[in-house]
Image 1 (tube, rainbow, N blue to C red):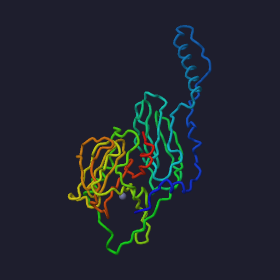
Image 2 (cartoon, rainbow, N blue to C red):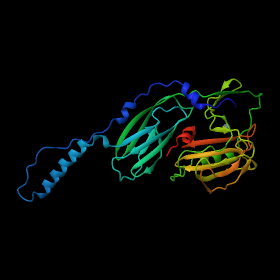
Image 3 (cartoon, helix red, strand yellow):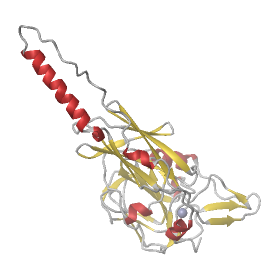
Image 4 (tube, rainbow, N blue to C red):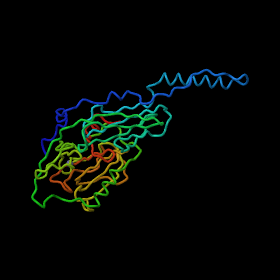
Length: 333
Ligand SMILES: [Zn+2]
């Protein structure tokens, strides 16, 4: 549990294959189709219309050839992502008045895009330690145009914990109630964007377990496990504050059957971005409340499957637990 801080150092030491395919980012996939440029034989009468048509046609040709790079601008950040990072895909359709969201697809899964400024859309694509290292083909469709952008997701060396228990003592099992309620919460995709600016630390305690830690149970690698959040070692009763604004969309109590999560708050930050706070001793908010960044929402405890007082902050993008570090340090506006 300890000595697991320093994610930056871990990342700096990981191998980074050179980015592949990023040279394609500036390339335009579709060119304007060639327009006929042959001259017309004007009819002898009523030639105003064809002249105008011809004029517009040649103007159209000029515009298409003068603005070849304008079709469907796409920017993906970060340019050198690692497993656990959130990819931000910003799309500027050619027509700024378009109000139909572009379709962003990776590996046949579609990620919702939302308006973030006039004529600008953004989709978040989560990456996790369980995914493959390497190339992601991001396909963006808008206004009948398609762009494919290749991004290389590099490895990151996550710390490892070795957990040993006696046979038959594999720990508490989650109840159906908590699994279904938490799954429903994580699948929320609210169009409204509640957060603004970098996220705050939800507790003042030191970080005791970073995001992404992998485990061996009795010497066997747990291939589906990774630490889906960040642990803060604040004492019992220390404040838990909302790291960003949001709507309280889940409250669960150990006494109701939240056996593993313990007393839990789920905050919906909007656009598929959600937070859960686990093992709480106290809860100060109710479902439906809108909270602001920094507002106390509960207190650290050790309820549920917890070996000692700490706050577990789980941070999710489109249902996948991602590393909130970048969201805290740089923000994702
Ligand atoms: Zn944790």
